Every structure is written in C-alpha cells, then in structure tokens.
Length: 299
Image 1 (cartoon, rainbow, N blue to C red):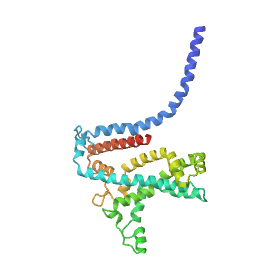
Image 2: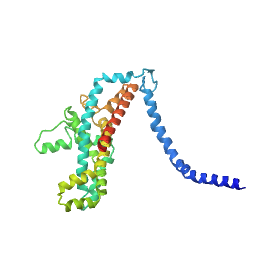
Image 3: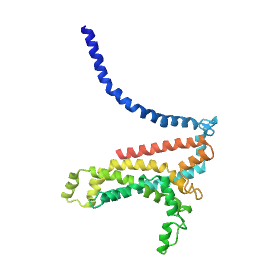
Image 4: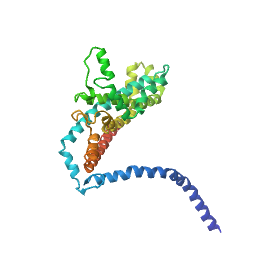
C-alpha cells in the first residue's frame, strides 16, 4: 500500500508539473500551425522552385544552381540592385534622423500634443498602395498640387515621377512622408523611458541642451536606433507596392527595384524559378545586413 501510495503521489506530481505546459501548448499550437503553414512550408517550396526552370504551375525541369549563376550576368538585375541601394541609402538615414527630430519635438509638454502625435503617425498606418495613388495626384506634372505651388512661387514646374532623374528621389520623399511615423513613435517611447535623474544630473553639472542630447540622450537611444536601422533597411530592400502604384518601374526602368524586378520575372514573364532565386539571394543579403548592424551596435 505504501509503494502504491508513493506511485500515486509521484504520478499526481507529474500531472501537476506538466499541466501548465500542456495548457500553454494548447493555446500556442493553433498559431504555430498557421505560422508553419503560411511561412515555413512556402519558404521550403520556394527554395525547391528556385532549383527548377519553369512557371508556378508546371514547375519545369530541374536545373540545379543555374538560376543563381544566371544572376551574375543579368545587367537588368544589377541595375535594379543599384536603384534599391540608392533608395536604401537615402531612405534609412533620412527616416531615422527625421524620426528622432520629430520624437524630440513630440516629447515636449505643450497643448494638443496628443493631436500632433496622431497626425504624424497616421500616414504610417495608411497602406503604401493608397499612398502611391495619392502621390500620383500630388506630383502630377500638369495638375499636381506641388507644381501648382511652384508656379505660384514663380518657379519652373518639375516632372517628378515622369523624369528618370527625379523619379527615385520623389519616391524617397513619398516614403519619408509615409514612413517617418514609425521611427518617431519608437524614439518617443524610448525618450520617455530615459530616467529623469540622468538628465537632471547632467544639467546640474553644467551641461547645456546640446551636451545633454549628445552625451545622455543619444547613448540611451542606441538600442532603439539599432532596431530602427534594421527595420527600415528591411523595409527599403523590400520596396514594391509604392513602385507598383506609382511608376511601375518607369521611366526608363529608373525606379525598378529588386522586388519589382523579381515580381516581373515571376508573374509577368513566368520565370518563377529565377524569381524565387532572386528572392533567396535578397533574403541572404538582408540577413547579412541585419547581422552587421547588430554586430556594430553591440560594439
């Protein structure tokens, strides 16, 4: 009886120990299945597709790494990569710096500050497709409000999205208007987490506003900055919907980015194997850039 009672007590203890874990897995399992079904399985299928030469329906024949070798001599892909690099170099620092400036301004205790914060964040939650459609009207060379303002000031009108030399810069401006809300909110939350004692101690020691910002505030914002640089870099490398709704990669392919070129290959020319190969290379580049930023931030 003693051994039976001891076994029963051990069994009940195990049930009590495992019950919370099983309950937790019961809640997590449906979401896990959705993530695996919508992310992991398509990723594996796309990897297999990148090793074949065909469309999305037939699959085509197995060609191994030929799609990846073809990328080395693709001049159009190289041009798209250059356009993406230019966009990334302009958009990422611009959005981070503007976001920091807005956060510093929105952290002030003034009237209607909640309204101002909402106004700056609303463009971020608007879809990029809607932003692109609106931009087509705003930057229209003939009827756009921007050229109307330039004419009112006595300046010459500009072609904006229809000029190969101005189209990419115009996309950067549109992206900054729609995407600066994210860095502003992240920086604002980080600013409000800085201990007031640090700032007050720096001021007591004779530090001016500029010195407090440089030696106290900015070092405290370093984790937020690392996160934002990675996030905005990934966003820039994946630019597609804004290009699709504004220029379609034109004029003269001056705004064709890597993802738009990938879309053209896979869904317009039906070279799905080549398109998925480009997607995997882009994933590796994004992973390498994110790792480099994390490593630099840790140092």
